[in-house]
Structures are given as C-alpha cells and as structure tokens.
Image (cartoon, rainbow, N blue to C red; front, side, top):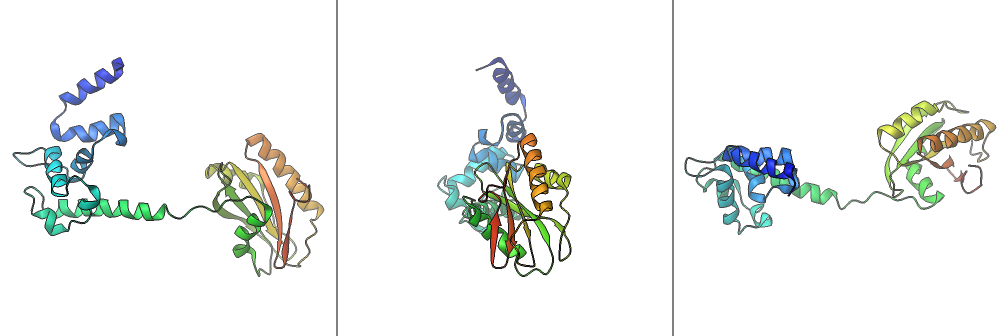
Length: 234
C-alpha cells in the first residue's frame, strides 16, 4: 500500500457511514465499490438502526445476494423491507432495468470494414437513388469498425463541395482512427474527375499529418462503385 492509498483509507474511515460509498466512488472509482455500496448510493439513506450500506446488505440477502434475483423483485417485494419506501424501491428497479437494457444493446456489433465492398455496402443506403451529389464519411475505430456515417455536403447534379477542414473536424470530434471518403455520381459514370483525384490527394496527405489515415475513396453509383484503394489511386 502506497502512502497515498494509506492516507485515502484513513480519510474514508473518518467519513460518516452513509457518505462513504459516494466518497469512495469519487476517490477510487466505481469498480472499487461492492454491490451493497452501489445499492447504498441508490437508496441514499438507511434507518435509525441501519446505515445505508447495512440496509443494502439486507436487500441483497432477500435476493440471495444475486443481482439477477434482485432484478426479479417487484416494488411491493422491496417495500416489505423495513426502510425501503416506494421511492427507494422504484430507484432500485429503474437502475437494474437500465443495466438490463445496456446488456441488450451490447449484442449489436458495429460493422467492420475489411474491403472496398464493405465500405460500399455501408454507404449504399445513404446514396442510393439520389438525383444530386452528396459527400459522406465513414468514421472508423482502430478495429476498422464503423463508428458512424456522416454527411459532409450536398450539391447539385454535377458536383458538391467537400471542405477538408470540416472533414477532419468531424473525424477528430468523434475520435476516429481512420476514415473512408464516399460520394456519388448520379450520372452513373464511375470515372473519377481530376477534382476527385486532387481532393483525395489533399485529404490523404492531411490524414497522414493528423494520424487519421484515409483508407479509401469510394465513387458510388446505383449500379456499382469505384474504389480509389483498389485502383491504386490513393
């Protein structure tokens, strides 16, 4: 134990019993708290006989010290415990429901880009059947998973403006580790223009400086796509 840890532990012992879980969380982080201490933070206070932590232990005992069993208890079940009124019971149930929903949301995995076709399929829903040009980004994390697609600009039939400053501002704000550029050609022509090539060169160079590499630039049409990476144009 370091001197700082020892001092921190001494400080915790000097706190009022009901304040300790909150202060402990601030000082040591949420992972340092027991289930009872976390529940104590939710209920806020105990009774004349029991501190908030001790009351939380009683609640856990009613659920066989199992959070899954605790989540099955109703408001009426919890209110049978002395010191737990309707408000505290609802708070506990709401917290456990949030945990359940979080677990459900973790099942959905972010799509991963492994080739140009993956990038094309990810951007397809946004550019299909458009009568005008639009410029989009796919923001990627370190695992090349899509953080989110972002529209940068919308133009006319024959062009749209893509501002490099705006592109990398968006990438930095979302902590992207890499980006894929994409824009559509409503005409169906897959040949990149000189302006397309020049913009790609400038963005690729800027990406190297910012350590946010441009992995590809996809020209989209309803019937197919051209990948700058596949064509050796990056």
